[in-house]
Length: 244
Image (cartoon, rainbow, N blue to C red; front, top):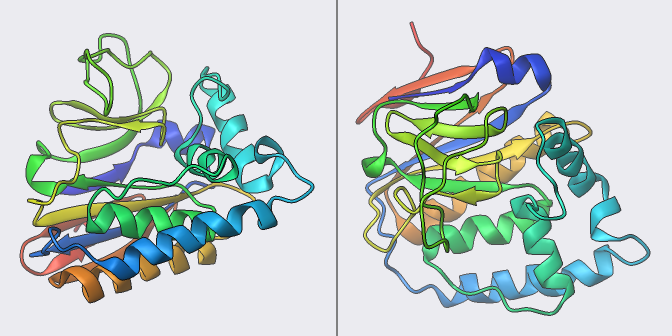
């Protein structure tokens, strides 16, 4: 299995950085009270961190709004995952507990102010690519939506051999590859664009990996993808490796 940043994405967004964690043999069914406390603390800290600045104007959110505009999406109608989390926290909304790994990456996402998402590796078909959607992409049923819809040509998507698994870079994930309590193998991704530093992305994915090991067990490997290393290949049970 391979994860690749497509050349056409790097042509438009040459400073793309992805932090990737591959978790194998995890127990994602545990109800971890400490994670609920951590998520609550992360939410409660957002209003203080955003004093005097709107969510849309914060550098770590504004960069995604600009990226969305560049591929034709309206950030007001399609907020990035980190903007969505921050806006909910600013409104005082309590984020729901989903499952252990989702709770982990949501907490770290708020702490680091970086988008994060994950897919169930066993539901992925073939390889995964961060790519530009073309004409005639297969319809995809997104989380919380009643009917499948195809991505728009030109938008940035994650896709596998069956179609999109996340639309508009980090807007909404597909229902097909979502993490559940039955997930045993997961791929978690943290994303960065300038002015976010590569080290910030690396620190966030390492914290997610550490927390998965602590709360879900299993084995977790991490790697960083960018224009210098745009592709990552892994094979069970040895973990991620660079393609030959």
